[in-house]
Length: 271
Image (cartoon, rainbow, N blue to C red; front, side, top):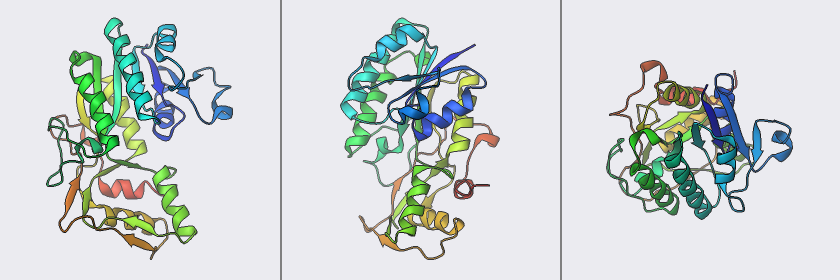
């Protein structure tokens, strides 16, 4: 049985992945926050990437797959991932790295595909690129890069933020000229499960196959949540549409694992 370690398993994406995978694989996770919730779980290890060396945990646990859903200090993340790379080169192990659409935020005229050149103007995007570039120099069987757009879902931080702002009368910041795609958490966890089962490698864009304006997506989600006329703060940062979307083309998943903007919107409702 595969032994999986999810780094950042106390976060929104990491914890959803743990719940999806733990019934099928020997799955472990790390936590930094929410210590009371995870300290009694024998499959979870407390880990502070700013103070601890990840190699100690990796040597003791000996996972065959490491999934990185870490958040936090960028420099600490880069150092941690370089330690992980050293480990997987010496061991029968691979890294699934959760990256971001922001590795393309320097391009604005078109959506981006799996093997397009990366370019970012943001600190966040550049730090993701640094880790990606280190992984791309490894043998193909040692890594899988998952680039994600915004992730939604009924209990996602993004949907909770929309609810809270509307309830407290705070304007929702929307970008009418930014064209994006998106995904939702339940479909994302199924996609990752499939990639593990099929031993997929390379770069995958796990966003919706269709595009929408960020303004429309946020207002549609607000409407499906029951808020007809939310207070909006419209931000125009260009005279033209600009794209921040990661579309799948080379590494397509089966149709039942693909996602649409409509599904993303509907996922915001607790059924």
